[in-house]
Image (tube, rainbow, N blue to C red; front, side):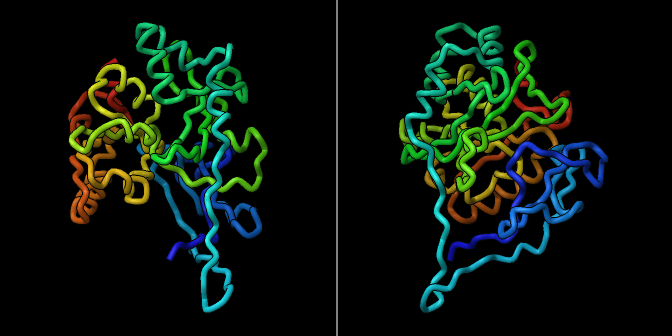
Length: 286
């Protein structure tokens, strides 16, 4: 039976001071009935590698009785398909694409834009949209992120620049149900091909340019490497490359999923490399 949770993490870009590390990187839980913040200690710090604070509330589910104890399930919302073209075929610049063009040839960058439907928005000046599109070509959400055009690094000051298209469009009743970034490309490969998963959308795109013989997908968060997100890949051969210091957590999940019929190898490549904690394949290769 599907459940609707009473509390969920805030999906806006607003951050608070973390009760553990005292950095303004704390995401609070929201009461989904009142749409108000729960308290100052229940939530997750965005510094997953350097802090790792994550305190969950008593997450009771909400059920709406109809007849015979049937539960009314809230369905996800999907964006109109025209939005992808609207935000892709534009004369605006994107800091992220400017960075890609400084590292790779134009043909490779244009192919990556087409493959992943990379969008551009002035929600923040010259920001990037990473669309989450499932295997049925349904647009589940558009994640907005800002990058430094010279370094390719995310802009985190004076706040972490992460938001969503439904926030930009003020779609207040939009129900976000995420999927893996790049998942729509799964229909273009066979079951014998290898699927590679990392955490960052940026890294998935860059790795697709460097190693185009593999399908590169991204979870979008260290905490989203879980069965709900990986279910469409159950019959595929999967290699995952967790960020440095995250291998133990992802490997435990991979072991559990393999017992349920998945085929996942969890690479420990980054654990032994001289890169900073939280670093990924791009930090190693570029």
